[in-house]
Image (cartoon, rainbow, N blue to C red; front, side, top):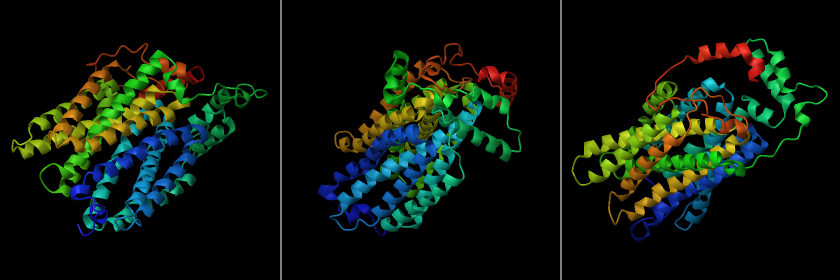
Length: 442
């Protein structure tokens, strides 16, 4: 490496303890960004918030390259914090838009498939780091091109679900008609009438109860669901980032090669979820993947000093497989468990707690001086407990996306799927059947 940030800011020798804290600043930014951008998305719309997040992360990352000199690390730390805010806002809002633009039969496919380019983006970053050995140039190349994503504003419409939830009926109808036209389909005007059944008193004039983040804790069902899902996010983020960091710093072998393996193992984990989530269900797969990740980490801890480096790397990849799969599942599961009116805030709240897990994963390096494998052992225990708690969730397979708090509370009431039950119904067949009773279902 020709030029590194650690050398630039002298985070070595007696100042090496500073490195984990500066690494954690990104996660701290993601913590605040999860809440702020979740609130903005639910309040002002998905697309506007996405544009703000893209501009935010691109500019903060770009200007970070110009913090030169050993005394400028405080400025870089602030920009690193801001970069974390914009980064999580970009992905989180993009995910919600993607899920809300498709029918409920395809939420799983959309929610998981969006993770594959996420992994490819990590691989591209690894390739950039391999080819560009100067950290300032790498910083510019990694962040400035993201500004091109602002063109999405003219390509992707606002979420129709968000518009309907906020009584912007005319705008929602306009988008539906445009989508039908571009797809070469006839717009079902008789269905759109259900959005405003009385022209003299359209839905847009009705007063609706203002929902807030407190609604996530308003009932015992929502409270238990929010706390459990928040812990799932905490656990999976701790393992995901902890194992990614360990692959480049703790395990044997080339740092670039280990990083590529750690990143590319995510793709088969997402494909695994795509093929099995509609067969086995969300709940058992989340539990299974969390436990796989946890047990792998625990075994790695006891292999320390055994000389079995190949087995250690294999288990780290297996743990990353489980963590990445769990990461994909919790995004989809959260979107399906919480209603439209607070979906972004629910994802944002869970993502906020997840960042505490990411911060913890990076700060765990500080306790290595007491016991070298302590960080990975703690991650393993946490993931194993999370896997057991995942069994308490209701199954959402076959359920429609809830729009209200009451809808969300009813999820799983009539679902009697067992943990080992495997069934598959073609989503196209479901779609065909549903068309028969659209007016009633609306």
